[in-house]
Length: 298
Image 1 (cartoon, rainbow, N blue to C red):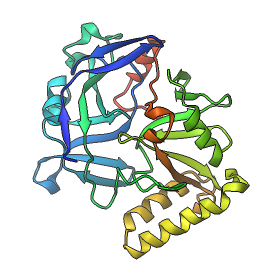
Image 2: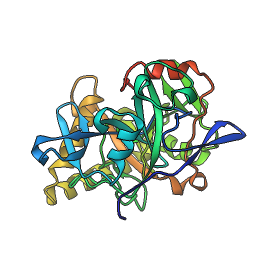
Image 3: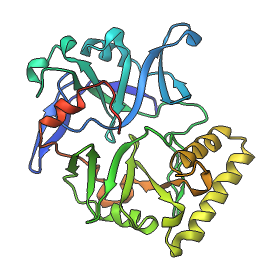
């Protein structure tokens, strides 16, 4: 699919029975979330605008969609550069300094960084050897081969089997019922934990080795073996390196052998009639806190 960016309105729920239409450039009235990328100017690309995914010392570049830089610049981002997010519905969000934001009179707060909606992204970004829109596993699961950091909306499955978006002390429950998705999560990780939903609808989870149920251990081991064999056969060093980084980052001893496996459990269309999780922010203080910095730790 051709990559496009379209400046079109989107519907955002603000309560269980009410949604508002948000136009490009208007304040974002929900949780600031999604895959994290940046638009940068890079000497290696002749000072052209490039799109970057970055995690500490790792960075991978892609060509940005047409008109995204213009939308960022118009919204008030300095020189059109900076970070942005892409939600599970492809909505592109960014934060704009209050002093540079033309629609500050519509925002719930008037200081700091204001979350703003820019438009919708359609199609997959081309990061070369890293496939952010792979084929979902046909049977069972697979090792997640997209980015294992800053990729997807970060949700949590709670003790009472609710899908909750959490940040610091704020907890916002999805307005939809995701019982099928949560049941699939529970098959591989019976304890509460994180679940990620990417802009292409893929779902991946963290599975600690010790949390894998007895009934699923052979399936998980087969997924690991298949992934490793395929990656080594195709000389796909990117996926080997990224998965290893995830294992080390989630290990208490920096040993990948006891890290959390990034498991691809399927696509949203396979669960709950394809409903995309949508949180409702019912506390305006959240916007004050999340606007303290351009990027905040999650």
